[in-house]
Image: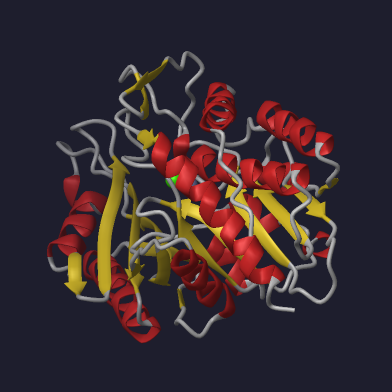
Length: 378
Ligand code: ZN
Ligand code: CA
């Protein structure tokens, strides 16, 4: 086996170029075009779906396919998302002591451009060196940060993969996410009745009081080791002289255990409805399953492959659960087996976001090792 040295300069160039293309959710077109140009130059087949319409954005998901140059290997995919959690049109990148960060006034966008650049660089190395590989697809999505919407809208007719790897969690490189909760969102409207607060308050029903009654009795925060719940927002009322007729609340609950999630959501719904009833008002509640949880073990093919690839590189990384969701939740729920793999991005969703160049390079190494492991599964 010949060692292919990662050229850090062009990897850093690729990563910073991706970061410098502003791409908040629904405005990913420019970065999609850049990546299409990159992959087209390497000879991949490019297909877009119609996700832009579904998500209300300016760009579709991109599915790129590198046909196999050997026979009999499983077909795999790598995935990352184009969008960043917020805009960074005036991004100023600072590279210092092997670390890439911003000047502190914006996000870097390493979530998920660290994942994306590792995947793109590895594909470039595979093609340039004609390394043996089975079919590889890249599932590159839009609108991950606003509810995994691109992944939900992904046209599965374009996908032909046995299993895959979603590059969207932090170091150590090669960390595998084994478990995530199922996540429900509650949209609550509490309806009272307006009345003049000074003249005839007895004719009114105060929705704020309904909300207070319900929430004061609600189990929130960490419910148990598998379950959390939160009231995220509450809006209502206009003037002191009006008995408040309506309060709008958003809340969530998450659990690794579906029965416990249902119990917690039931508890929250019951308290809102009970309080509304008590005051003669009304509770209108919509429950939205934000994403389905999953549990993976060392026996699942993508996990096996990552673990073998790490071992081959003499690296180690943890297998751990997480409290958050990613496109992997949607892919798994839609029948595409995969696991989330640790990449280089750190302190994501903050202006202190950074990556270590060494981690970016390791992430490329791991990607190449995964491709090699899969090629040897013939
Ligand atoms: Zn991400
Ligand atoms: Ca994110």
